[in-house]
Length: 281
Image (cartoon, rainbow, N blue to C red; front, side, top):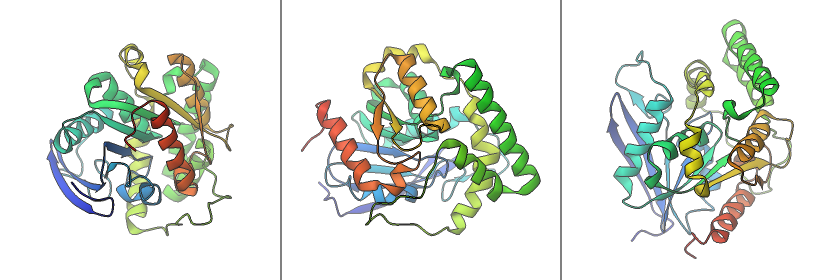
């Protein structure tokens, strides 16, 4: 049995790509599915507070960072991301895993729940952009903003477009926990941004099998931020909770709370799993 200080890095060959993934800690498996950045290191501050109770699995999403495509020009969509997650979990554990999915990562988690429910023990879906559950006016507004982001990306470049997307999503960076690490922008971040905007963000329009998800609703915990109620992420979380007839659970910080409030976010995760009787102390 590994200890919480040990860390192992691996690669996994999947159809059309090679995934980079990391295992850290000891205990029941907990996979962290990343938000837009898609990089396994994006939640390193949070993971540090989870590894004493869990074997934490993180990975670079297909086409981003160290998860390289066999053909850089190959088309892929949410179905491929979901299949990647299915294969990864099948490789690293024989038991159902907890999944902590942030934004786009939560979308993949919900799709996995619809297709492979036995692989998921609990899915905490933090501000997951399930567009189809929004009221018509909000859905149309979101689609207009995404169209604006695409135009900005095309005309002014990825930095301007990403800033607009982050603001709309409800990401706030004005408050940080005192000991929260503040990552410096990296070359991987610079490389990932145009890929996310051009190839991943358009998947937000993808419709999920809500009937299949509703059948497994007991496993789902819709989560929303406490500090950006006007953001797309918060609105989607409330709408998802309503669609599944579940309470929306408050999480610290904004849409980027996993980054700015890692200690408090980890405490909230532990609290949720303890309440559900699924945490080994």
